[in-house]
Length: 90
Figure 1 (cartoon, helix red, strand yellow):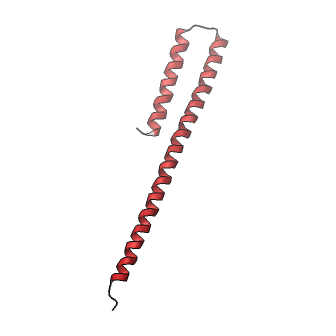
Figure 2 (cartoon, one colour; figure 1 turned 90 degrees about the vertical axis):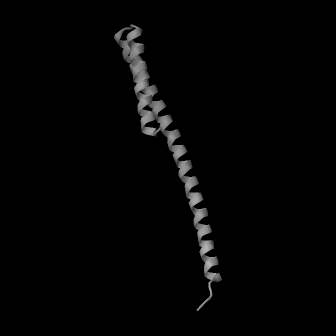
Figure 3 (cartoon, helix red, strand yellow; figure 1 turned 135 degrees about the vertical axis):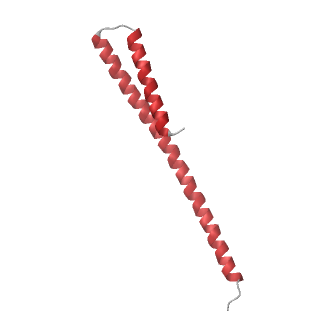
């Protein structure tokens, strides 16, 4: 699952939950606006935390790939050096 789809689904689910809560719990206009404001802030905070977690995991994966790439590059250079030493000059 891509990060964009996950965040999109998360946002849609949170919005549906907030709307259902408003419709099922009648309150005054002021209370409803405060509840919407609080829900929006909470949603933004959760989305930010989720995005940071995804970014952290992506950074870790990229770092690991770079490390493996450097290891492979070193092995290839060693093989090339060995091949050059084993070839007869002339």
